[in-house]
Length: 82
Image (cartoon, one colour):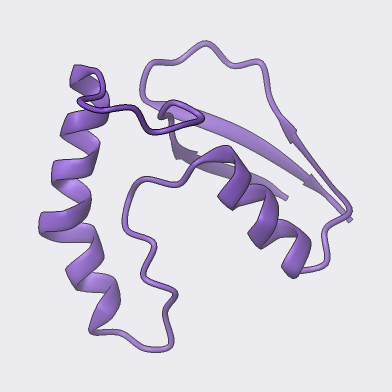
């Protein structure tokens, strides 16, 4: 499976760069509220760190998660292996 997610730092450090601040703003003003009203939802919003993607993939039964070497300022691509 291929997962495309927003690219943010692996750890949150305030105040974050311009792109991360934009993504958090979008997350709390749009993405999170729209997820909360459509249960069932884990309501993660826009910003997921690599460890969250790995944890969710493991819970879904995937054995391995690779971050693909794609050079992009906005997106990170993950390959999930059964």
